[in-house]
Amino acid sequence: NAGVTQTPKFRVLKTGQSMTLLCAQDMNHEYMYWYRQDPGMGLRLIHYSVGEGTTAKGEVPDGYNVSRLKKQNFLLGLESAAPSQTSVYFCASSYSGRETDTQYFGPGTRLTVL
Amino acid sequence: KQEVTQIPAALSVPEGENLVLNCSFTDSAIYNLQWFRQDPGKGLTSLLLIQSSQREQTSGRLNASLDKSSGRSTLYIAASQPGDSATYLCAVSGNQFYFGTGTSLTVIP
Image 1 (cartoon, helix red, strand yellow):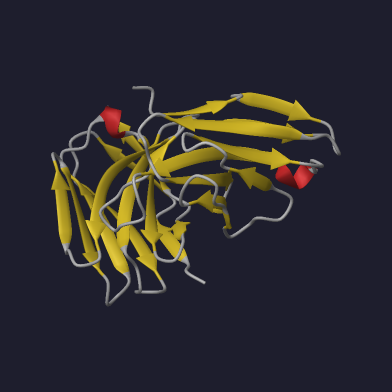
Image 2: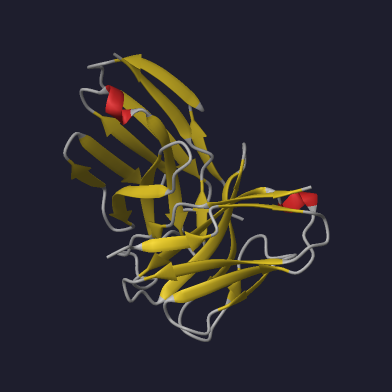
């Protein structure tokens, strides 16, 4: 049982390049989330999904797109990377959105945009 | 918009000391509050989850309390150990999840 995994762990992009971050979970969770963590600002929700084929915007969605084609995978895309997107990105999942459910986090992807 | 604040931002204590970390939030309409631990370069690990109808939760040397009406939560760590050194984050769940910026704890042997 691997839990939540993220690929890649590190990436350096040039301004304007595109990339996709992959999140996978093997816990049969319905809900999945993408966060970014910046110094002094805590974690902020980018997008989330409440089930296969669904996505919704979080607090800071601009410049990102997501897809949830399979229940176990949640992809985060940057179409044209900007230096402001330099951050550590975390994926998380939970069984549901009920108040008893905790979130399980992946190890993070450190992205630098030059 | 929900605002979550954690004080202090950093804390250094000698081994064996009991300590309290604080979390405050501005909107009391929450589903639950969670405390997480984050080690350097790692993801977050859930420590305790308090549902909105509960007042506290305990796990080993950790005890978390929730006062929704005042918008406050505390994480009490008893008999601190060097292995407790990490950043501790609180998060509240409402229509979305909102995280505090964390308290960086160092326990000195």
